[in-house]
Amino acid sequence: MENEMKLEFISKSNNEAFARIAVAAFVSSLDPTIEEISDIKTAVSEAVTNSIVHGYEDKKGIIHIKCKIINRKIHIEISDNGKGIENVELAKQPLYTSKPDLERSGMGFTIMESFMDNLLVESVFGVGTKIIMEKEIKEIPKAENLTLEEALRG
Amino acid sequence: MEYKYLENQRILIFRITEEIDEFKVKELRRKADYEIERYMPKRVIFDFNRVSFMDSSGIGMIIGRYKQASMFGGKMEITNLRPAVRKIFEMSGVLRLIPEIDIEHEELPELQQNFI
Ligand SMILES: Nc1ncnc2c1ncn2[C@@H]1O[C@H](COP(=O)(O)OP(=O)(O)OP(=O)(O)O)[C@@H](O)[C@H]1O
Ligand SMILES: [Mg+2]
View (cartoon, rainbow over the protein chains, first blue to last red):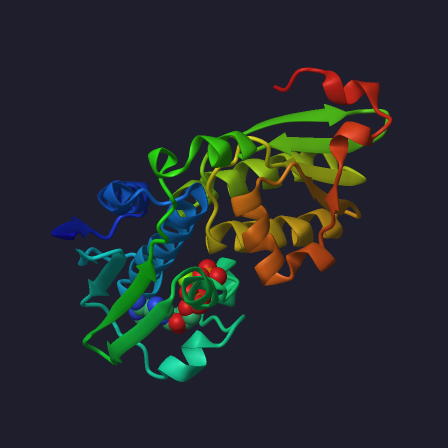
């Protein structure tokens, strides 16, 4: 299957729920499990929150989301034209945060990395940041493909 | 978020009823800090039974409330974590600091009282 969508919204934190729910709805055609959906929603929420809190630092800016489905893989790009990341390797370290005073825990990239199959961070300091994530949605055998005996065994 | 305070045991229980992200965390922080300062409880318990979504903003919020409760001499616990929420708590290592308890097995009849 192939499909594609794009979203653009302003960097207000009350758009976070909208963004993750929109991506979850887009992926739903692949019949993901509850856990897969929840992983994707969390990863999207992390990237969008980072754009709002760090990229634009609560100033107004635009956040772009691009999603593609290729076969059973969901490809998600989330980008901002905010302040960018000076040292991406450091930023990705678990527990690293540049804003400990704002009660951030430095877990965002660690969550994205472990909930998705691939994570790529492209950032130019002073220009902006793009997060690219992919996840393969596992195929679950359909009930009608099972023999009666298998179905009864559960 | 709802809360109740058990006067005799000095236990303050918060039941979070919303999805936890950066947007919602601002209000949760403000409400929780207000009640913690007001009651200065011995124990603060956050009940996650109704929380179906949480991102890393929730981790920061919980650690912040742990510090707040400690400042007033209280300890903190969390309870009723759903699988998606537990996954995030486990990943962050926060459970070593803020233990998960089984609130159903606490010998506290007052726990059944209504929330405010
Ligand atoms: N879009 C972005 N623009 C600019 N800087 C960013 C962006 N995303 C992340 N960063 C930087 O990378 C650091 C690590 O991000 P990460 O999401 O892992 O942790 P955090 O946001 O600080 O805390 P948490 O996600 O746990 O609330 C941030 O503190 C910030 O300095
Ligand atoms: Mg983050």
